[in-house]
Length: 263
Image (cartoon, rainbow, N blue to C red; front, side, top):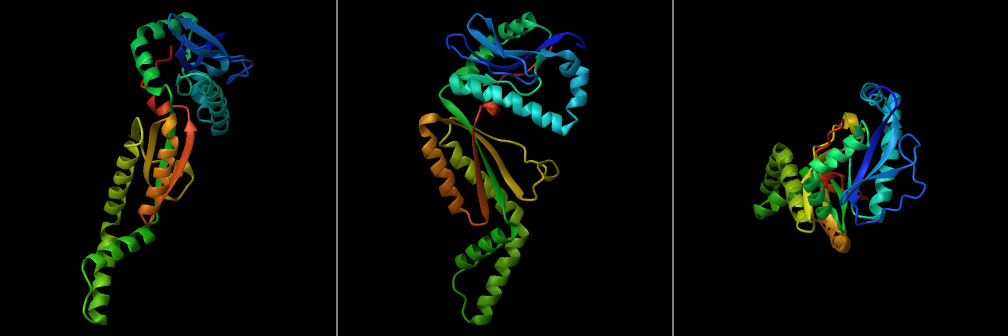
């Protein structure tokens, strides 16, 4: 695909829903349109293959400025669609030869898209990241362990007990952080329709030096959003040395559940 136009896929919706696109434009500044196949509607744009074909695209994806601008344009379309109707968002750079090839995909994976639409309807994705402060977590664990050992007799004995607890906490801080991350995730899943632990972001990629111990995404019923966010606040106060960061609402990228296969 090196000449002409290809079809950039943004999202898939049910044909029963009427996604009014208005004057929405996509990654190439193209007017966004729809391709219908029976009960499924794909939200797409026609993009020049000299830029978005397989070979030129692979080169552009190495350009971080280009990638960021394109990702923002893609997400702008997806976000506009999911605000209007339930939709399965497709990730960046899903390009097909033409409308017919896209319809073939919709036909081949109709069941997958239908299941994904059922899952995301009336729900929104939220992200929760947990960052650990090594020193603060070590101190909190040491204090709890010293308290559990009981009150030592004499100043010297009390000092030794605290010191043993500090050394123990330093040795186990990695495990303690992981245990707290798992507890936080387990609690949040109780308030979500689905939850996933994503890969921890490499600091070299994120540009942050914080110690990330949980990178979770959660699909939350829209009428339970207040319960979910309140739980995040509660958990943030429950675990000293752990800071929670709530982001969203987002299109349900993590829960689309449909493999993407560009032409």
